[in-house]
Image (cartoon, rainbow, N blue to C red; front, side):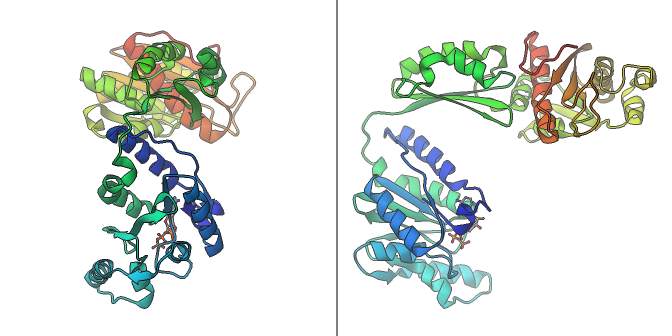
Length: 421
Ligand code: ATP
């Protein structure tokens, strides 16, 4: 249960519920308890809404976790709402009050009446220490359900869950032996409908393994779960066949990650020369811990001058009567130039029309040329990406990294976005 006006009004996106769901599934797997998530609900800070949700959700589950509304201000009403729906009095927790006083003292602050309220709990509940904020969590029971109230800020919630909550949950103390196993894949360059067709009736409700497919930021995610591990392993072969070369190696959640792992494993160094992606490829690679092992550097070669002077692109290619900046010849020269400039083993280059202006009948908005150079051999591909600037730029990053992955592996594969060159 996510509680807060900001969440119901859409001013902040609820990250707590999905994160908690993942933690519970993982903890269930570790402790041999099959976790079935049945509902995620969101309510405003209004007391009556919180009370109604606590009563309704706790009646239908073994475990209810609520986040938000535990702070010191008057619009934080979760603790009081719980107090009204449980039997028994509210008490002020001495340990929690001491911890709160100490925390405030360390910041040179005195405890106010509003802050002291955060140490209140129903007499049958216990407080969970909050080492990253002032509001302790609460742990107890309502109806048949084990109930947790946790702080809304993720920086407080997450360490509290990891350090104090998961190991204390009663629902994880009685393993039923039915461990839910999962497996997942990430792919780029395949239409969702094509993959769905290839997966056939796996996507039907009730199918074992349970299979789901979703697209996020251009990346296709396939996930499977089952209590039958052998069944999963058997099915993995079919799913991998459906994804083909567009599927990333196990454990890689993005093309950048796949390129990084492959090149790190081979001891290779990467350089980039980016035009329309403006540094996003370098950004994607350097977001991966340990990227200095692989990433030599990059040049954002946005204008013709930079392409010529920094990457050695032949000026004739960029002249009015040449193929132009968005062309196979230019990205190949850029990729080669980037390898030379950085003494790298491999390079990626990108030049395209991200829009909204600049498209022509020949090269509409979304046209992106990608160059790759691996140990002196250059390749290019032309793609046509869905035409809004943000998507063209982010998907071009994935497309370029896939192109390099294939080049490094000597694979000649097609992607959904390929356009005739
Ligand atoms: P506080 O002491 O800050 O008031 P709290 O437990 O009362 O703590 P809230 O007031 O509900 O928490 O939320 C405080 C902040 O935490 C929000 O402004 C938001 O930034 C973040 N937050 C709360 N709930 C969520 C959520 N479901 N997903 C992501 N962030 C959240």
